[in-house]
Length: 75
View 1 (tube, rainbow, N blue to C red):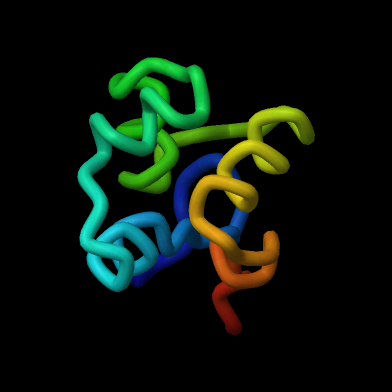
View 2: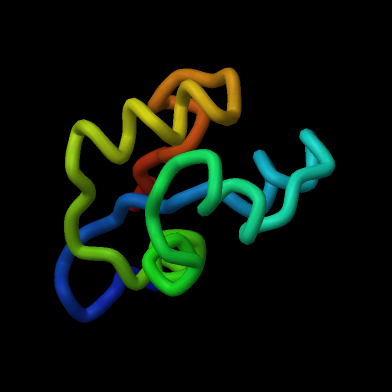
């Protein structure tokens, strides 16, 4: 995957996390208290930022750590 135009190399693994847990984006949105649209932006690597409170809620709902949800692309 080439680097994005905005210069960041953070990749979101939300699709993989949902698939591994048999959970839909809608179900996760309900559990976390954010919109499906906002989660979709995150899932499709179009987000420019995430609040710690949202990250905490995602990790609690998915039973994971932040490093499970995100990685940084190498050169």
